Length: 247
Image (cartoon, rainbow, N blue to C red; front, side, top):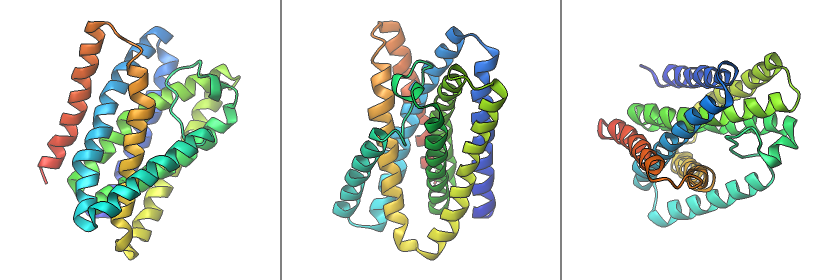
């Protein structure tokens, strides 16, 4: 399959699945939703770390020097730290998120920006390798579903009707396709930028996993729940490893 159709299908599939995940909030109680989100966050952590360390960083190192790639990743992490401080880039998985409940409409802006970046990441991954593109799509999908579920709940708690919350989430998801298409045509004419795009993408995945997802997992200290988290995390890494080893 040609690269561009693969990219479009991946971003559209990701958007549809994310919206369906968000609508899960409408169908189930808060208790069941939180159990599902907690499990998915554990799996998402593994997919993000796997995609960064098994896919993006090794591919970037093949295209540029180790020092350049390491510096780019470091700069990327610092940039995402600043973006999260400005509430443009963030991950809420609960409906009582203190910062973002105070800024309901900013959630939509942040989502649109974040989804645009996810589209760029997916496009860059597919242009590097089709199997890696699939693995990256899985990682994006795994961490986007629990985030959108949390955002959806926050919007409803902030006074949005369920219909408007779903519609606004749809428009914010559409920016991923825009980002993917722009990245495809931009990177196709500027291949020299590919290693840096992969390095920054790795930085975003590492930052999300370590700064946003893992701290939430540490709220549970019971052995049984911790063991389940570890199994799901390893399953996430294993999913990415499966696609990477197929290359």
